[in-house]
Image 1 (cartoon, rainbow, N blue to C red):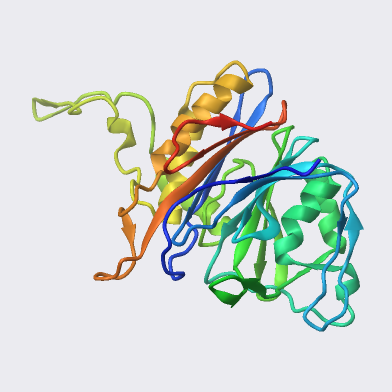
Image 2 (spheres, rainbow, N blue to C red):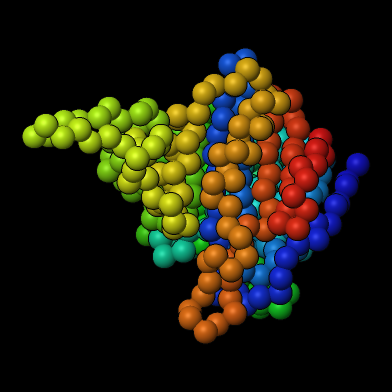
Length: 330
């Protein structure tokens, strides 16, 4: 069965506003794993929710006109596409493995496709499809990446021409393990991701390092101090979070959701983990007009849709900017 659900989204805008996405992971007491992810962009991605069956054949013609790596799906999966392209920008398979492609402009440089490497190579836009259709865990993905070349290749996007999107990929599995895949200086880098979190640039290793600047953040009340006989106390609850960034830049979102994810009280099961993930991810929601292009332009970047993936029970939850009710699809 092949189901395609068209999502009515946002605005027809210009193409010079980039993805501003956020991926988080919530673990419940019963070891359920829930992934939350927002998708921000300027023009509407015209995303669809699509199922891909076990046994589907994947092929591609490389830039040199020759076929690149082909394979047959071992797993069925559900995914969201972009600009009517038949490729996953986000998704989850029936084994509890999740992927998300997030924008990484200014830092992404894909390997080049050559006559020698295309037999073991796929274009970056097939990476999500390959992972979801072939594997069950992040460990399996990490091992298989050693023998894979992921090269750059243009996509013919209606209304936009030929485009190569600079992306990195986060992979989360039902055991709570996560990795991040990036491409820099023509080579692939694979990072273990202990937080299960990803935003955009700079690169993932920089984002982890940047958390060291915020080790002072605490959810606890700050005790009053006395100086020269005068007692100074906080103006209210939450003073331990002074200094936590609140803007929409990728480093700030990374810090903010890291703190919220680590400080939130644990929940019992997957259903409550979806609720918690929703509350956390709403902290980086971008209303239309909050993030704009250059002054005087009409360009804006908005949270187009949000998904929650219950990896234990294979359930996909979805909501869009205009339809804020959460729908369960699987």
